Length: 197
Ligand SMILES: Cc1cc2nc3c(=O)[nH]c(=O)nc-3n(C[C@H](O)[C@H](O)[C@H](O)COP(=O)(O)O)c2cc1C
Image 1 (cartoon, rainbow, N blue to C red):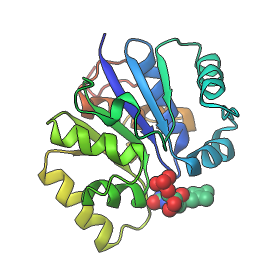
Image 2: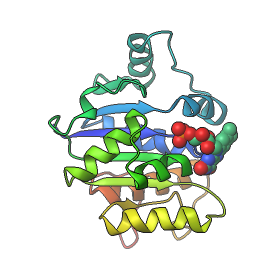
Image 3: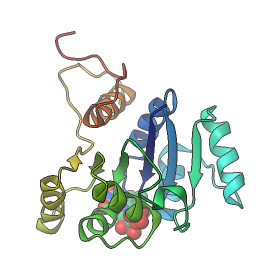
Image 4: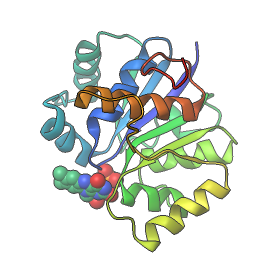
């Protein structure tokens, strides 16, 4: 079974991250890291609140929410979590959505929390990393950080909607963006209808 690290940081667009997560968990093991700020944004934007008093409770809540045993919750402050080490093999990592703070931490190799450390490990091990940076507008600082990472082979896949599929609902738009993010990792899915299909 393929295994991915999946991080959600505190940018808007939590529903897109959760759509990707739901799809991944159907066939892959997922090590989930959520920044403390994201728990708040996920609740505000999607109504989902899976934060428990302990990590074990959070994991239980998340598995119940998604109905999947493929999910392994890691606390953002747990620098001894498996995904903190390159010796723990994964097939790659997603950060969806990716805040400008997390983007800059990854671009600088700062590794101040588990999301940044796992991304640093993914880059140093030469594994695929897909970031979905969300801000509007982007400053030159944001763009420079993205360019630096893109030159290292990191896929920059922002949550940008397409309109050629005639989306009728917000769910259609979310599916399209989630599907394109999965495409960036090379994951098979049928989340959206492909042009020409
Ligand atoms: C409702 C809300 C929406 C936000 N949206 C964004 C966003 O789209 N992009 C971004 O870079 N930061 C956004 N922020 C600010 C980040 O949450 C903030 O910079 C935070 O420190 C990021 O931390 P993290 O990367 O550790 O999650 C938002 C904050 C709130 C409260």
